[in-house]
Structures are given as structure tokens and as C-alpha cells.
Length: 385
Image 1: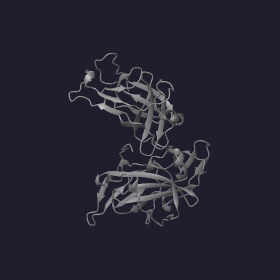
Image 2 (image 1 turned 90 degrees about the vertical axis):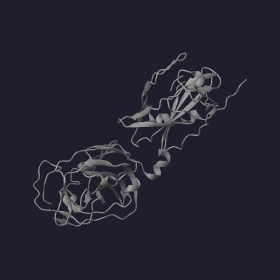
Image 3 (image 1 turned 60 degrees about the vertical axis):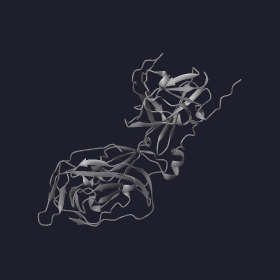
């Protein structure tokens, strides 16, 4: 302005191994979700072999450990099937040969904390698979308390390699049980689930009862009025061709470049306060502006409320001394994000008096502090005397 559900691709090696039969249990009690991966990780699968007589396809998974002393074959004959996973993920990778879809949810169920590990079968038979062991644990990152895994579904997946047979494309629901986490626990890391890349994976936990305070309502915004459309022969260097807006969202004088943030499940709203120095002042909005959180996740700019978001210069008419608000709409933040950096690249140069197309970077903005500024952006009508 002038006056951050990632595709994760890993190639898997093929290593053979033998695997015998075991029964598997399920938990049908009510549950509530603590955390979930809203997309689908995609990884390369080992080579698929086909039985010439039955046409049954088989994948032998890569070894999780460098050693393998197991001689018996363990068959998991009743692994739960995930019925509603597609509601929050994008499990459509079965159409792509050699690619496997993975996702997960962490839930509270029947006095336990349960990690559901979703796996889309790349073939009819999966061999040499590994789920969990005594290595598997959840660590509370605030207290340091270590919650060790208790058991797994299938049971034969506890500390051993196993095999499972299911139709290609089926989404299986492997489960790992932990002691129930305290209600106050919000920041954790999960270890010892290698096939879901959990070797210290950090998660932010949000209970359903917390979401009323975790998320905001979208901000109320007084949309500017367009009084003159930009010319068909628009050029950035001709001020007569620029669109003209008026009646901006006015706020009380709170200092130039004051900012506030609203986080919703659908979008992130970032408000910026701007001092209007002239009764007619030009602005433009760089569509490549983004937010980047402390883990490096990028969130693209989707729109700016009521104003063009295409790097076209426009006029804003008002009064010198006005404080106006522009509200940027970015992609929704990760629930684990604690801070964001505002990054606006340099714009396209243009020829105008005092033209300024330089970008701007504002680092490490604390999200909760920005949310506390929401009241500063309440609409405040202009009073003229």
C-alpha cells in the first residue's frame, strides 16, 4: 500500500519383509476434535506388484528402522475405515499411481486422547507397515510433561511391522491411544509416528468450547464509495485515468499505520490505519502482499475490502487530517500461528508527483496484540467545525 494444506512429497524406498494375524478394536464413544490436518500430505509409494492369477496388487512399505529381526507375519484383519475424512481433507490422490494420501486428527474419546492416522491404500495389500511403539509420545510444550502412548489400533501395530488387506483407495483409520490431556493443554509435540512425519511435530490444540474465543467475527467495515471508475485506457502514469473513491472507513486518530487483526476459520482480516494528508490522495495495493508466520507458512492476499487489489493506482477523496482504514483479507491462519510478518514487495514503477512504489516489511507482529487493537478500528464519523 502506498501514499503463508502444502503439498508434501517424499519418495519411499522398497524393502521386503515378512509379516501373522491379529484382531483389531475400535472406539465408538463420542469424541471431540483437538487438532487436525486440514489437507492431505502426499508421499511417493513403493513399487506396486500385481499377482498374475488374482490381479491383486501389493505394496511392500519401506523399513521404518534400519534393523529387522521380525520373522512372523502379522495380519491386521479389522482396521477401521474412515467414513467422513473427505469432509475436511482432500483424499483424491488414489487416481494418481504411486502416490499415497496421509492425514490425521487428534481427538478426545472415552477418557483418552486418540491420534487418528488416516492412510489411503495404494494397493489391495499393504505389507511391512509400521504405526507406533514405546517411542510414541505427546509432550506438553508448556509444562514439559511427557504422555506416553498406551496402545494402538490395530493391536498388532504396536512395536511390530504388520500387513493389512483392503480395497485400493480405501482410507484406513489407524489409531494411537494416549492418556487424556489436561484441558489447559494447548501446545504439544508428537513423537514416534514416523509414517506421518511425527518426530516432534508441533500442534496447537483447540477444543470446540474454545473456538468462540479462539476465532473472531469478521470486522464490520464501512465500504468506500466509487465515484469515478478508472478509464478504459488506464495507465499508472496518468492520474486522470485513475478511479476515484470517497467516504472511506474513518477511525479516531490512533497514530499512522496502526494495525489490527481478526482471525476467522475462513479468512484473516488485517486492518491498517492511514493518515490522509491531502483531500485527494493516491494509493495502490500490491496483490502480492502476504503474511508469513513464525514457522514460515505463507498466507496470500485474497482481496481488500471495497478497494481494487490489482496494483492499479486510485484516488481517495476526503479531508486532510482524516484517519482511514484499509482492510486486507488474507488466507486463514494456521491455528498454531502466534505471530506474523507483513511483507509487501516493491510495486511497478510509475511516473507521478512524489510517486512511491517501494515495498514494506513489518516483522514479527504478535497476533494476540493485534487482536486487542480491534476496537481502534470502530467506524468514527467525521465531525467538521
